[in-house]
Amino acid sequence: QAVKAATEALVAAAESRQRAALDTAVARAEALGMAGAELATARRLRDALAAEEECVAALKSATSSRNESALAAALAQAAALGLSGPHIDAAQKKAAQLGTHSAVRIKLSTAATNAYATAD
Image 1 (cartoon, one colour):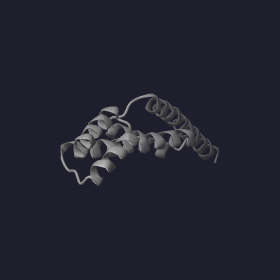
Image 2 (tube, helix red, strand yellow):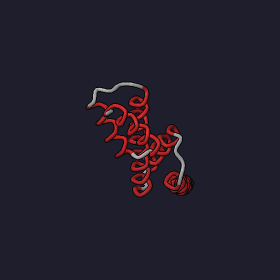
Image 3 (cartoon, one colour):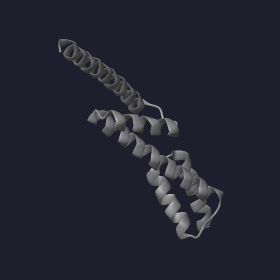
Image 4 (cartoon, rainbow, N blue to C red):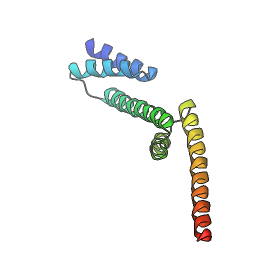
């Protein structure tokens, strides 16, 4: 009876895609010594959700820090995870802005260097 209830809890937690529910259901199944497809699926989903949450946190941090390399790394991770949504959109927009700013800085620096070289 307890195993059946734990299996149902695993399935329900997986369907909900809520990490806290998955944590609880997995812990309960493990405490009962369960093994099987439902537990393996719940563990994989829990781990995937954790990776997604970490990626979104990295995207938010990189977007607010204006660090181009951190932003690029977070966007690459998001692409690898297949994520989409408002956090990714905001990060992509910020990356484009930073890329434009970097291109302008490079052009200004090159122009200044050329101007100084010509002045000599």
